[in-house]
Length: 264
Image (cartoon, rainbow, N blue to C red; front, top):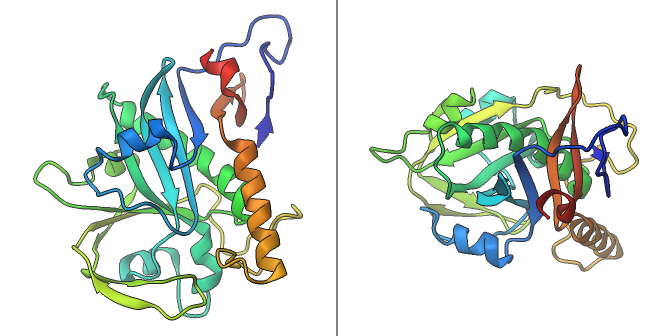
């Protein structure tokens, strides 16, 4: 990730830098701006548990919606087959799949939803790694089917339709605790592998944890307390930062800066 704090000039320094029209602002789920839009989503707002990353969508310096990523579901056959998840690697790799849990726009401009989704897919892996020390290998989402809701947005972004969910699911209070099962409505499953999808990820970043997910929500052990403290510090640092794609003539990169430089 390329940090561009306080950057107001282009990298050549010869002309003013112009930020793109479409950007994502990192926020908390309790942010009043986020919550107001979230409460109007077709899926009831029951809060969030587990890993979670939330953004406010800005388009032409106006709030256009919200989009969130969260913990992947424990298991569903179509998704497991798509990513190659089995009993042996489940705990290790579930932390590397991001569930697009919420996406709602208040601006219905044509093609904007597809642009936001494409931008989110590029940005959220960097933030996910920064907070959770896991390298995302792909994305999943579950759509409640209606006559007017068939997952067209995900199809337009080349996500793969994997069939329907079973209509029941396991609820975990942490990956290392026994699960309970409850009935849920059947949903359409879509998934997409990240551009650098690989089961044998090599990373020399000291934050990367090759052992996979280690829960910290209980905050009982010194290790859990340290992990929770580190995550909280990263969230605090990123809150209010605006993420965008910095485009050069021959390449582009994910960048971020304080929102005052982008939104005024």
